[in-house]
Image (cartoon, rainbow, N blue to C red; front, side):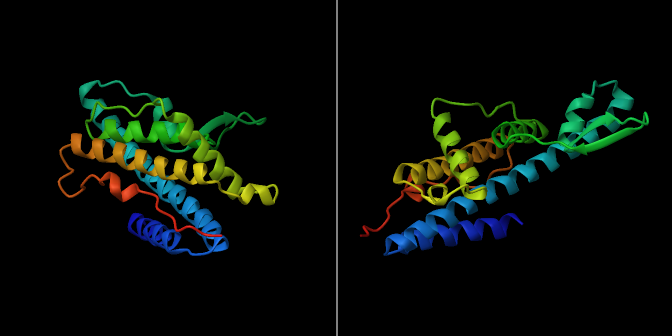
Length: 198
């Protein structure tokens, strides 16, 4: 899945930079933004799955070692929440977590699962990531034609978000000692250089 999402993103990036009309650029900005967030969401699901497996392994190991397990964390990593219905029966429902808190939780749970102490945190540029997420939400749930417009600053925020995401992922993999094959992307890779259009 990740390979397909990365190929989609790469193709969108190329097409965005090849676009020679404002209509084509607008189209590829929207498609590129969707592809960025599809890839981030795909990785987030992978992080969650890896972290859940690590927590389940801890659970089995805790029987012998007495290690303390957080049932709430298992519930969140499984993507479920529980309640008691009117009949007094336990039921579950899908956990609905806003995008950014879920991303941070899954990123950090993934790091922990790989024995990495680094934690992804909100930084001084967090507002740019929030802006990109708001743009994504507007594109996925458009209310009017203006919801589909993407300014130059907004597409720069999307590129910034992608760069931030890759940098954090690279750092976690590098610190885990498993990152020999995963090279950090150079800054030039993220240079937004769109053609001038009328």
